[in-house]
Image (cartoon, rainbow, N blue to C red; front, side):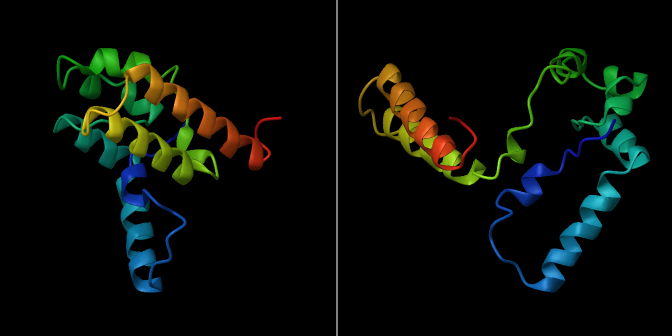
Amino acid sequence: MFMTSCQTLMHNPCRWQPPLQDRTQFVHVKRFAQEEIQLEWAALGGYTCNANVLESDTFLNATPFNPAFAETMTIVKDFWNVPVYDPLLQSANREFGAFVVEGQGTAQEAMDAIAAEHTTILQEAGILP
């Protein structure tokens, strides 16, 4: 099983990029996602989503936190794969920012506002009924 740890490189896949930059990123992700590169990355303390690397002694012994990380990766859901991920993230950033950074409202109000907006976004996208 393979899942890339390079999602942050492609934070906003909806944004147009020049062909050379797009190709360069593709080549980097393709190389970085290779299992032997992921093992090297793990040995340096980097995280991975490659199931084989997660189970390797190299990864599990690289840092004290890696066994717990490997365990949690068995239950994590891939939220990057939702086509409306960007508006969901923008909504959460706006509401959490208003509460945490600007001190507006309560945590419950922020969570309720996010839940309401996420429900609307997911319904409009046909993901929720």
